[in-house]
Length: 353
Image (tube, rainbow, N blue to C red):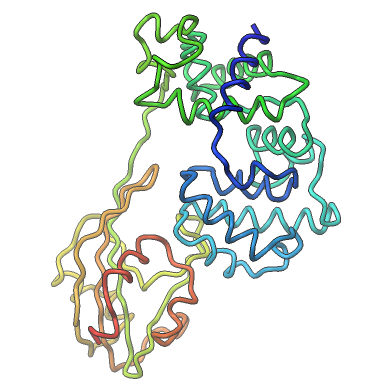
């Protein structure tokens, strides 16, 4: 089984692989960087971030020495900011505990923050050609369709079965190219919705193709529970045209990022309800003017749907001084979540004020 599968994959890969910058690398630091960036990120978008990071921090010690705000700002727009915080934390560990050299042992790699089974297998095989099979979404799809594995991929048993099968199929002498090939095959040919089954070299052996079950596999057992959140952002501006920001510190989405002052509500509220809100009066004092109300923005995260409005308010009175104060011109220095970035792109605050 291993020979025909791996041989077919590698032959296909050599003819069809995309020319991506990290594929020319054996530097474990840069391979790790690409893998973290590409988690939950499309290759087209991830490539530009990979190039930005490798240009700014060509060595892991430079990333370790950077300020967290600087790393988050460079990451802005990619989402899932815990990846950036873990990236920074791991760079410090490698720099301090491994003397700036990325570990070559699988277990040492896996011990690092933000690195699980898949990422450890990818780094150890791509950088050091060690025989560890990768299992990501693409691999689940290829193996479940081709071999008819119906165990749910989001179950403990499913993860064990797919890992065992991937390990059995792995070309132990050429794990790097095998792993690259199976992921590329899943990404480019055995796609989730529009797989190119007619041109697939495995179609005579493929369980899903022969039984017309392509869109039933892989199986997922659990449904994601989605929470709705309503965010009312107060873009507070004082008489000197300084804007007030809050740095998110809670164990919640966007930790470490900046945002405008926030009043979160259980449901959508009206402008009049916001103006009378006690929290707004704590922020802006008794004398303030509402000068702009944005449209309603919807922002979809994996487990949350966010509904946000931005209210630009000018105040003449004193308020909580624990906020970060900044002039207009310095707003671009701060790392914002994509939701706030959309508002800033749509709205020219200087014109409004």
